Every structure is written in C-alpha cells, then in structure tokens.
Length: 561
Image 1 (tube, helix red, strand yellow):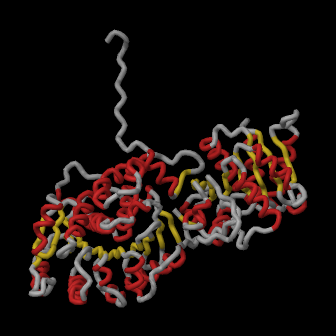
Image 2 (cartoon, rainbow, N blue to C red):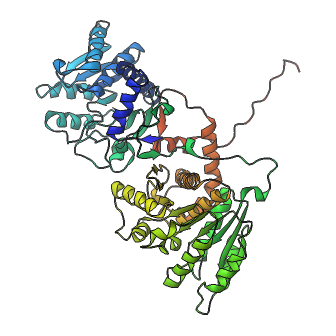
C-alpha cells in the first residue's frame, strides 16, 4: 500500500480527475460515504456529531459528511463552519450550498441538522456544541498544512481535544504536516482517522503517527493500476502484500529448501539456536547449523530438529581456513544461507566472513557480525551474484556506512535507503517500524511489532525466518517483507495474550506459525466496505481475529430422520 506525502496525494487527486474523469465532487462524496461508514461501524451509539469544517477541500469533505449522516437517518449533526461563506470556493462551496438546502428538512427545537459559523468572536458557542457531542469530526485542514496552527483556530483545536467525545479526523488530523513524521505544533489528537486514497506519512511515522489513532484508508474508487507512473517513495506493508504459499499435498522436506545457518561461538550458542528455531518455525524443510565444533553439543541440545555441521577452529579457537574448507564441501544442494549471529566481531572473523560471502553463490541473509564484517566497506557486497538481505540495527547500519547511528524516522529512512544503494542489497533496518529498503530507493514500512520485542535474541529469530523464506524460493524483497511482518505479528500475538514484559526471543519463534496462519486467514477475507483498517489498526484486527479455521456447520436433516 502506498504511503503518501502531500505532493503524491495531490498528484493522485489530479490523475483521478483528469485521467479517470472522476469529478472532484464525486471524490468528495466517496470520501464522505467512507467516513460515514466508519462512523457507523466504530461509533454506532453516537447520537450527536459535531463537525468542525475549514474553508478548503477538507472542509468540503466534512460538509458532505454532515449531509450524508443526516440522509442516512443517523445522528443529529452540528456543523461548525470555521471560514466565511465568501471564502468557500469550488467543490466546498457546492457542498455548502447543498447543506444549506438540507437545513430546511430540520425543524423543531432540536433540529437534525444545525449550522453554526465560528470565528474568534463565537468560540464559546463552538465550545458548547463540542461539549454536547458524542463524536467530534475534524475537517479543518487537509494535506496542505505546512506551518503551525495559530490564533483562534489554535484555541478551537485545544477545545476539540478537550471535548469528552472521541475524535475522528478526515484525511489528516489538523495541525499535522502530511509529509512529515515530526509534529508542527498544536494538533488534533484523533482516536480514528479516515484517510483518502492511501495513508499519509504523518499517519504512520512516529511521533506524528501517535496523533492519528486508528487509521482507515478509503481508495475513493481509484484503482491502483490507474496510478502507474505516479511517484511513490514509501509503501506500508499489509497482510495482503505477503507471499504466503500453501504447502502442496505431495510435498516432502526437500520441497521447502535447505537452509545453512553459520552462527555461534563460545558463550553465544543461543544465537545459533534461536536462528535455527526461527527458520524451522517459518517452514524451512531442512536446517543445518554450521557452528564451531566446541559448541556443537549446545546447539544440538537447543534445537533437536536442526542438523549440525561442526566447524573446526584454528589454534586460537577462531574460524579460519579449515572451517572454510569444511563449508566449501557442504554447499551442494543447499538453497540459502544465514550468516552472522554470534560469530564474533574480531578482525580475523570479519575477514573470514567477507571471504565466505564473496565465494558463496547462494542467497544469503547477513545479520549482526555478518553485517559488521562489512563496516565501512559496503561496496564489497555489490559484486555478489546471488541475492542478499542485510538485517542491521541502527548501530550496525551506522558502522556499515561509517556514520552515526540514525535517530528518528527521517534519518532512519535515509540510512536504510543509502545502505541499500551502497550494497546493492535489500536492507532491513530493525527497530520499531522496521524499514525494508530496496536498492532502487523503494522503502517499505512495517507496522507490526511492539516494545516487548526489544530483547536479546529477537533479531536472531528474524534472521532464521528471513533465511527460511529465501530457502523456500522467495525473492529477497518477499523474504524480507514476510519475515519482518510475521516476526512482528508473532510479538503482537504474544503481547495480546501475555503482555509485553517478559517476552523472550524463544516465544517469538514458537508464535511464527500462528502469525502465518493469521495472515493467511486475513488474505482469504475480502475487503468489505469503502474503507479498511491499515497499519496498526490492521494489526489489531489480525490479533483480534480468531485464527483457528471455522468449524463446519452441522447439516440439519429433515424432522424425524
């Protein structure tokens, strides 16, 4: 799913109008219908709705929503028009005229629809309406805001946030710059945001994303294929993006690939074990852990389903020429390799890893010490003939690029993009909202995962999972996207049942099959309605859904049989 900045959103709007011939009023009506549907689903008991409307197209969406709510025999609606009538232009002016005409249908002391002009002189009246509402809708500013809200409109935003009712924002909560992850200043703190075409950057990337609440996306009838050629810099991973092939009935263990995990050292056998468990729980047919001979027994005991290949150490207990020779004779028939967890960061080990990767003609995922081996020399990876995925954390990507560790969404996106370009590899920059960067500059933002996953060994499980998908024949992007999304979803499933505190890496490996089952179940369900949950809201639905297959309904025979 596209993740849009302001310029991309405006370009999609232009394409819809000019290329597809969809008038702006039709798009506005579709937006209002989607918002009304979300209100009916999420706030069915709201009997009084207050809609604060600005003078632009976002305000026009709010005016259209007011009329549609009334026409559906829904709640009583109060519209706070926060602009002069003579400031309304284009589609917003048309919507205002239609709404004024609809007022004639509202009679009595408690009208179904009321209109109130709000400015610096009538803020108290606006506050009174907000205080009575069961739901407040924010349609003040749209995607074009690039400076802080000030003056009496700032006071209105404060009043909206102070209202006891939940808040729903149209497209973007007022006060956010749609293109930025940073907060401009005063802003509406929404409980739900209904965004149009696709989510905007500010709705997903932190800290601005915290103001969006639960995000629903409404495509407004614009098919994705009609947007070919429209620039896109970011994408949001969803369950529908995953490549989750079913296992054929006639399959055997060789059908799902043989993954070799080169990992572990004295005191760090757990890294190898967790990577192996992550790979097996992801569905790899065969897993062999190639580890120093001195820890072979620990690896065997930690994961009995995996095979082991003992690597001889040189006199100083480091992997060297003998270990390389052992591996060189072992690669035939293998499908992929995972290299790095727990190997050690000594210069001799780094050199050994670089030589191994250079000679290996298999898809590879590099993590931890596997990434550190290429610190300040990312170009060494560009010569690889086979696909490669890197899974660094911020410190490791900083060492790879010889710069400080990235901090904040903007720096993280830039670092992931630079690392992918410098190495020619798919780069997974770990952390909350893990980023998956392609060498051509594409960035995919992952919505799954939680702070409980900030625990030792979590990345090792991810390495095994990505390696397993490579061994099963997926492309580097597909393997990274599958591994990251399902790894985070496994953590979310654990957090939902046991909480975030005390989550350990082994739990993640055990929950990977359940995460895959939940994703498959989600993909089988059609997207119903005009809007659907995205980002963390989609993740919440995945967690809440019963992932067990439905029981077949018993057939009822004729009476007496």
